[in-house]
Image 1 (cartoon, rainbow, N blue to C red):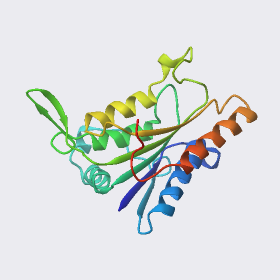
Image 2 (cartoon, rainbow, N blue to C red):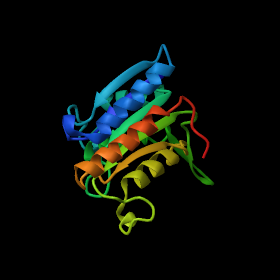
Image 3 (cartoon, rainbow, N blue to C red):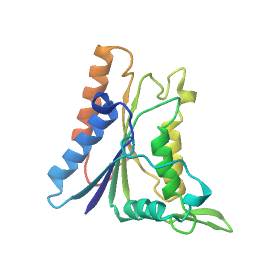
Length: 192
């Protein structure tokens, strides 16, 4: 079984999403003895912003092939200016490819990626979750659910640490809660 682990936070060792994504991968490695893990740090080794020349390029094809080869994808994502880091968006631009991960039909778009498990460790400095007065500004989880749903992955799992910029006590509690959730991740998608 193959796992692709992506981190996109620019915060380095201070990143909550990196801490949680690493815990998720560690948990899965403890369950799957022969798990083949590939790691990519999108902040340290960024893809360029998508240009016309990138479409069908060797680098873009390699990113897509790596994604398609993975059974499980674990993504560490910060929440910057209401959405995902630009480094992660550049990666998404390489995997939403007509004819490979989706196609257009008379009934509308159809996702071609089936049976892939996506787990996202998302950290947000503020509180943007459901019921928050600023929930309408949350576009990271929405973008990822939309992008993965468009290609046929309708049930990505999110482990969210919220309020991490609201002081050390709130940060510690958010991280602890996310790490507890990470310790319960299993190979199969939990029931909704």
